[in-house]
Each structure stands twice: as C-alpha cells, then as structure tokens.
Image (cartoon, rainbow, N blue to C red; front, side, top):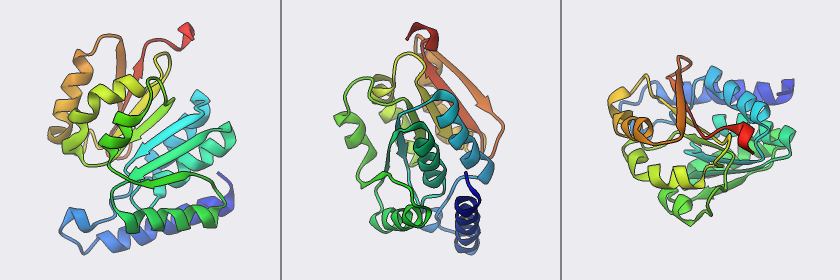
Length: 198
C-alpha cells in the first residue's frame, strides 16, 4: 500500500477507535479489524494472486481498503457486503479518497452467498455477525474455489465461543485444511483442496 493510502487507513483506524471507545453497545460500534489483520489481508490477496475477492462485513471500510488495494495489484474483482447502508456509504467515501474500486453492496450475506455460482470466489474474508457463520458454511464451501481458494475468518481468538459452531463444521469437512493465526483478534485461514491440483 502506498503512503497516501496508508495515511487514509491510519486516519480511519483512529476515527473508528475514537468512535467506539465510549460505546457499550457493540452493534453501535464500527468494530473495524486490527491494523495488523488488515495489512495481512492485503498480503494474502497478493500471495494467492486472488482475482475474485469477497468481504462479508464491510463496516466503515478499513479491511475493505486493504483488500481493495490488494485487488488493484492482482487485477482482481472485489465485492464487499454489509447490511448497514450508512456504513456502506462511509466505506465508499473511503475508497473514493484512496482512488480504489470495489463493488460495495448493502445486502444480506446469506442471500449473496446463496445466489453466487459454485467456485466463484478465490478469497473470502468473513467478519460479520458471528452467530450467522454456521448457517453460511454450506455456501461458503460451495462458492470457494476448490483448489487453493482461501477463507479468512476474523475474531476466532477474541470470541471463541461465538465461532465454535463454524469451527466444528470446518474440522468435520472433508478436504479442508485450516490454521489459526495469533494476529489481531485471531484469524482462521481455511482452504479447500490443493493449489497444486489447479
């Protein structure tokens, strides 16, 4: 990420933290990713040469900014989905400032996943309502590219009870490999099959 975009990311992080600090209701908070997680997401897009990228949980666009920056380098197509219209608009304004392109949608993630064709995404970042993750699982497996596609799930160490159900589904799914990284709030990386089989 260039210096101008990094400055926008730093400003957005500071604004989000200032906004969230006095709020007790987590649903009113922006709940942006930790900066090291956001930076890793941009790296993962580049390392996997992901060209079809989906984010579930835009919020105000910090992770969105890093993913869109990675997609710009990979020549990829990036879509981000959130159910909150004002936050989608805030993210859109952030990307406009950074001169980055993305398809930002105000939509229900379950509907977006159900309507996506098989094998339609190379990389999916999941950072939304954790209670819905287990319900997403069948479609997540279906829409993720079968050889080398990557699913990244945030908050697996900060909220282990809330991701336990999808964790059990991941562990039980044949042909799945996963690892948990102690970065930010904890990031679980999940892949289908082998990239060598492509």
